[in-house]
Amino acid sequence: MKVNREELSKALLCLFAVAAASVAGSAGNIPEREPKWYGNDEAVRIADNVLLYQRTTGGWPANVDMSRELTEEQKDKVRMAKDRADSTLDNGATHTHLRYLARVYNATNQERFREAFFRGFDYLLKAQYANGGWPQTYPSLRGYSKFITFNDGAMIGAMTVLRDIAENKTPYAFVAENRRERAGRAVQEGIQCILKCQIVVDGGRTAWCQQHDDKTFQPRPARAFEPAAITACESVGIVEFLMSIDNPRREIMEAVQNAVAWFDNVKITGIRQVSKPDESKEKSFDKVIVADEAAPPIWARLYEIGTNRPIFGDRDGKVYSAMSQISAERRTGYSWYGDWPADMLRKDYPRWRGKLVRQ
Image (cartoon, one colour):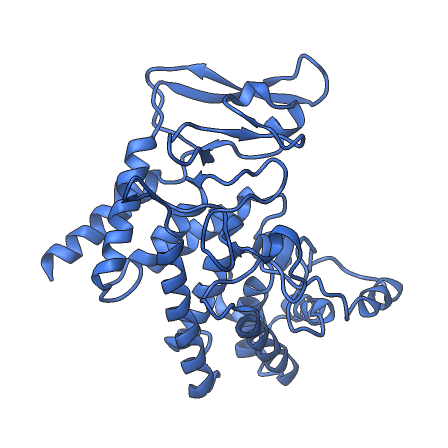
């Protein structure tokens, strides 16, 4: 049983785009291309940049435009940073680089790209906790970066590339069976972690927080404006991943169904988010919520655990009940409302349910 993997990829890309830097910012601003494109001079040049930025840990830092042409002086500075402990899964880093390197290796058969790919592969496995989760950064496990991280698609991005490797998908045919088996085990452990993290309220399962405790699996806050809450953004990528599992066992099906019920329960109707000129002149524009009975449903990024009320954070660490109460900088610098679950609820979930019924 399979949900369209293209839809899962779209969901992941959507999640990464929510971040301050998107997948493009982490992996070189490269759209999906035909396989032959990855063998041209430009693709190889970018791949060499990817190798240059790869840390000795095997992973990559976030928010680096790998497509930028570098001077020799700039390259020397990057080489001097090789031993930094800033490898991460944040904003599409590392798992996106692995996808790119695999494609370039397939197109060129140049060994340096294969070797770099395996260093990154080994990094992903080392970074995984024994409980199946992945932190945002590794080996630097400080502050909220040590938590199991769903924010911006971090853990789901890692699991997706490992699952594709385990299943011998294109372009990972060059990966030996022993590595594919290790990737498969890591994915299964990750699935168990996902199920343990699903937030339970009054005995009923809901969805997930952006990050969870690395020992207790409980919801945890991150940045000052990101309180512990149920997220309608990152939870979409989790549900899409669970729906893409072949022959799901009962607990996986129940996790999906409970999350979908929660999405339906917390949808918001009768309002629309719009942008308008910022009268305070702090920003070029501002975001406001207006009444509109004809507007399609939208969802808040964060919901208070236990009440399902939308909540909003600011850099002062306080939690507010309305987007209008937070600073202009945070209103415009974060995605507080969106239609993230809309396509999943309208298309993917009914298709998934239909396949279950036909079995």
